[in-house]
Amino acid sequence: MSSKLSPQARRWRVIIFTLPIIGATSFVLYKRLILGEPRRTLPTDLESRGHEKIASIYTSGEVKKGSGDKSVGA
Image 1: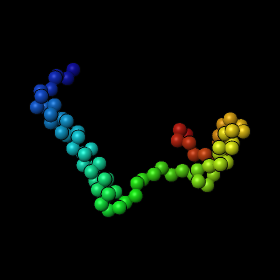
Image 2: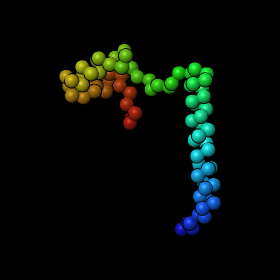
Image 3: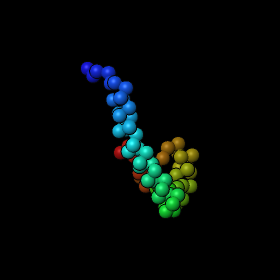
Image 4: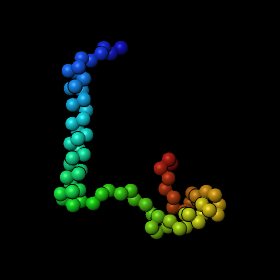
């Protein structure tokens, strides 16, 4: 369906796709290293309820659905 790209066109395609990635990565690193912004972390409730979840897994073999577990799939 599509014809082969010339080497010059392939070079432009690589430039067009990689420049935004490099720019975004550089901006995030600048904010982290120069401005001192902390890393983003995923929110977890393991600090407050982690022992209860681990105990329920060991005792019943599965995580209880009604115990505040917010799974991504649902």
